[in-house]
Image 1: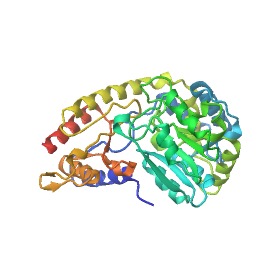
Image 2: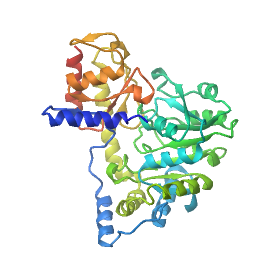
Image 3: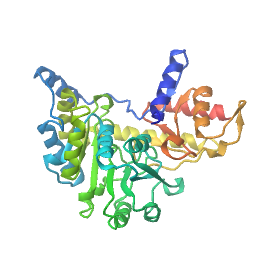
Amino acid sequence: MATSATLAMAAKARELREQGKDIIGLSLGEPDFTIPEFVKEAAIQAVKDNYHSYTPVDGYVELKKAIIKKFERDNDLSYQPAQIVVSTGAKQSLSNLAHVLLNEGDEVLLPAPYWVSYRDISEVAGGVPVVITTSIDNDFKVTPQELEAAITPKSKLLIYSSPCNPSGSVYTKEELRALADVLVKYPQIIVISDEIYEHISYAGKHVSMAGFSDMYDRTVTVNGVSKAFSMTGWRIGYLGGPEYIARACNKMQGQVTSGANCIAQRATIAALENPPSKIQYMVDAFQNRRKLILDLLIDIPGIKSNEPDGAFYVFPDISYYFGKTIRGRTIKNSGDFALFLLEEANVATVTGEAFGDPNCIRISYAASESDIKEAMSRIKAALQ
């Protein structure tokens, strides 16, 4: 198992800060907003109401009901309580799914770029990652032809995110339907749709793979409150899917962590019961930052970017610099490039190799506009 590249870069940045260096962190996918007041108030009330005991392994009934209503309101998906499992973050939901669905040697289809943990979670569960390469010229989206070409009799899972971490790409309804038309021919494949960035989208109404009637029984939808509600440290994620899969995840979780934190669960009820309009101010700010960072990246020679439709990342191609020597350092790959930016420009990013695309780096714009401006200025100066 590899160390998470995003967490490793964040640790390196902290180490340099402790040495007195002024590091601007654009590596973590962590919103810089404070938690909405209505969420704080719900957590405080939960403390006052003496919530302190072990929680049900798969989540409070009240929270599961809030999740069901959220799925109905935002995704036109209908689930029963037995189809919902609340976990300690969406990452645990993904891990539970890999462990209950994969046998040794089963293949996991991963359109690249993919979130760093998909690969290692799959491998630890005995799966074999099958990376499907995409292109920045196609906004890093996998085509039906590319998907079908990667499918074999051993294919068991397809894991993807939309909006995507790290590319910010968002699949349209037509694009997902085209992928579904391929998948219906291969009933052994279960789809895990990671929708943690669902509300941070600039491309119109979000679309879920499970919304297609012929994919509903073969799709597990994973979500959580870390990104949309800036609740990263509260560690609440959840899934909705076929009941037999949910029951297996419940069993798995019962032997690993049991139920998620009681206060965080009560706060999440308030988060999900409120309409997405309550957090629109964050989405608007991210959209402004996206424009800012793309405008600044255009002025840096050799960096090729597309315009992502969601999340809060850009994933520029920096392969122009491979083989070049800058300030006495030869850049061989994106890992070298990211380390160069950290040590020479004091800006933390993440190598694209960790996401399955060695030509790119991930830059998070979940930071203040002043930090984004200063970071891009430093990068431009370092590369000149």
